[in-house]
Length: 315
Image 1 (cartoon, one colour):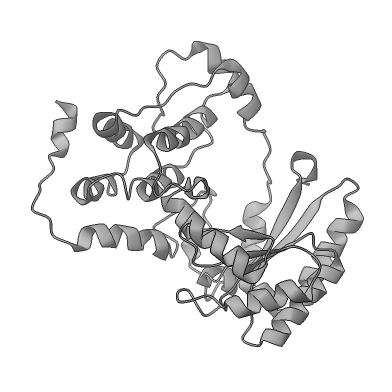
Image 2 (cartoon, one colour):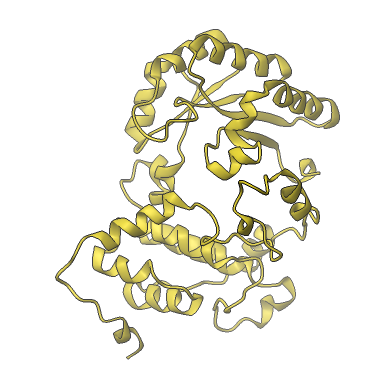
């Protein structure tokens, strides 16, 4: 279904979140590796064009079984394997560099190392130590999308790019020539507030002082977020030039059976009922969201002497 519009797919068999495991997704799939192998084989047999089929996975408690698992996916036709070098029960702590090196020496397909990387230097060191052909970063890229440039924090231009990506996704092709003042409406097309705001919360962590982050992190409306960004950082949405807009315009595609698939997979007794709602939108209040919520708690925990006057933004 997606092959005409991309160069490959990655099977996420590494997510340790509770809701994913309850639905038999993420790292829970490693309990039945034959299913993963069959998906890889079916993709290979069904899609005629050159197409990447990769697997993101976690290690097992037994190093030998981990290597055997990687060999099984390689034999099924995996293009490469991204290995998070922690087990499903480990969310923090040191990664197992020895097993990464062992996997790299035991299979022929490229291995991408993942887990706990916070800088470009750490990526280079891990690749050199393990011999892995690539590195993958997750959490640290939320705070610093520019990590692979060697930067220690995102620039304002980086934040501007995210604002522009979000804004331009809300503009219908038919309305492009009519835009006079770029602005995100309260209920925009193709854009969810939680996605827009959450990424900004992470990206501004090293840009804003804590007392301003405390204000920004609690905002609930597009208008308030945009007013804050313009007043504090002189950032506001910018309309792409016509060629950039056409090249980045959203494909009008939707998978209509999403809700029925989730409903079929979820365990009604264990999963949060609010995880699936009729609007098919991510609801930060209805999901675990522990990683994002931890950011909010870190900002709110510490008392600060400075008092920020939010009303001054509108004066």
